[in-house]
Length: 167
Ligand SMILES: [Cu+2]
Image (cartoon, rainbow, N blue to C red; front, side, top):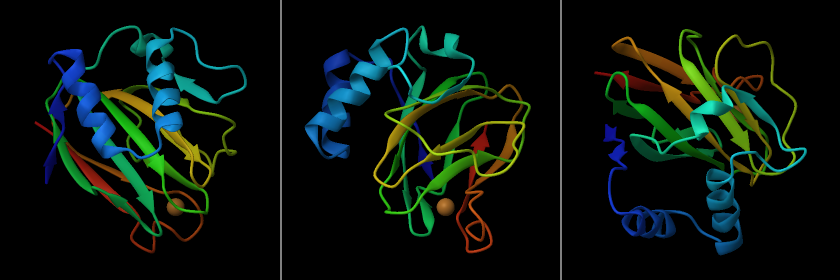
C-alpha cells in the first residue's frame, strides 16, 4: 500500500522528487509545462473538468502502466483531497486507466496525441499510447475502495487492475 505524498511542500521539493522518479528530461519538462499551463497543448486529448487544473493538488503520485499491470496497484488518499496522478505508459502497447465508479470528480490531460477510448466509460478513462504520459486529477467524496483497471481487451482479465482506498 502506497500513500500519495502530500504536495503542500516547497515547490523545489516536489520537483526534485518528480525528477528522481521519471526519466527523460524533455518528457519531464513537457509534463511540468502541462501542469503549469491553464490550457493544454493543441490536439492533445483532455477530458472531464479542466478547472481541476487551476490550482495545486493536495496529493500527487505516479502510476506506471506495464505489461500487464499497474505500479503501484494499491494506494490510498484522503476523502475530499484533490489527487493528481502522473500516469505513464511504460509499455509498447496501448493501455488505459479506467475507474469502475463514475461518481468521482475528475479531469485529465494527455501529453501529445492520444489513443481512441477503449470502450464506453461513464467515469475517468485515460487511454495512452506506448511511451505516452498524462495527468489525471480526481477528488473522492465518499470513503471506500475504488477499483480501477485497463479496459483494453483481455487486460483486466489478465490482472491489470488496482484499488484506490479513500479514507
Ligand atoms: Cu492494458
